[in-house]
Image (tube, rainbow, N blue to C red; front, side):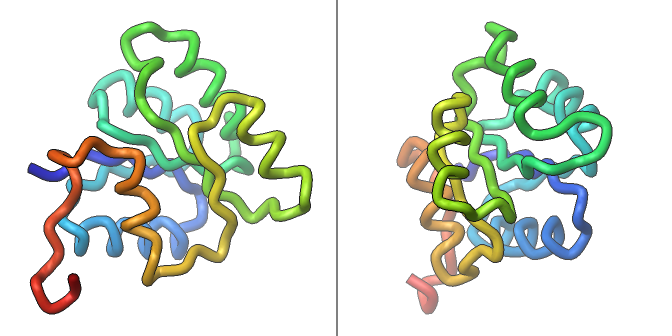
Length: 133
């Protein structure tokens, strides 16, 4: 059984890459193009994990995080920030805000799925083709 993962990302190229990698890793991927759409999708779909950009229109990643952590029905969901912010203090700021992890862009395609799966229970980790393991 694979995970249902929501990706909240306003950059189409980044969204498509993450979606492709996660689907190839055996996961069901839901997408949202901005923070408001992402917040609604989490509340409607109850994904197993959320990957969230920080800099987005309408509602940034920190606002999405605050809204989700304040909602008891979805608060335990792991939320991973994937962002172009890569200054030394950015990782600390993201983790102090309450994200479960920080990943900087550009992502490393070879390692991305395994990095994300580390935040999932073993029963929800994907199944890659045998040749790729």
